[in-house]
Length: 135
Image 1 (cartoon, rainbow, N blue to C red):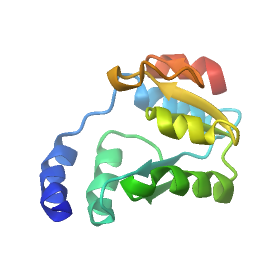
Image 2 (image 1 turned 90 degrees about the vertical axis):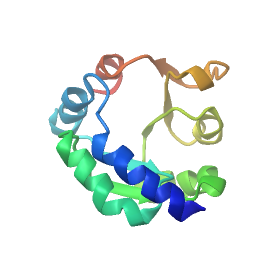
Image 3 (image 1 turned 180 degrees about the vertical axis):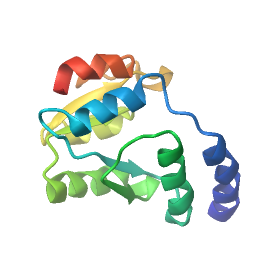
Image 4 (image 1 turned 120 degrees about the horizontal axis):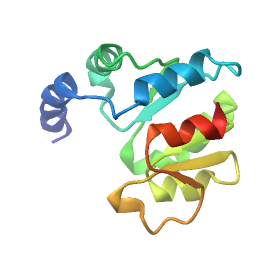
């Protein structure tokens, strides 16, 4: 089943467009005064690594590291990454992840239709909102 999903994701990744202002804001965070390290985590299968990197590069999105994690163990995996990488701020859309990590680092929740009930973390509605929080 996961292999079938991975092949469906190939065409998705080839056509994936970054959200408005993502390139500008992420480059500002990476190359600004504080020189943030940008770590991505995804539940995509790791066999899509090359396509994922190509997608980031095509959209001109900077990154330092990408972690591929199992969806069923996302909270535990992300908690380990936060500790290992000494992460001080996460941007997340999953309210369960926000809840599990909120005591370990600053949590910023990217607004989506499926996380309206989440009251933890600072909520942003677009990439421009982030610029003023951690730049």
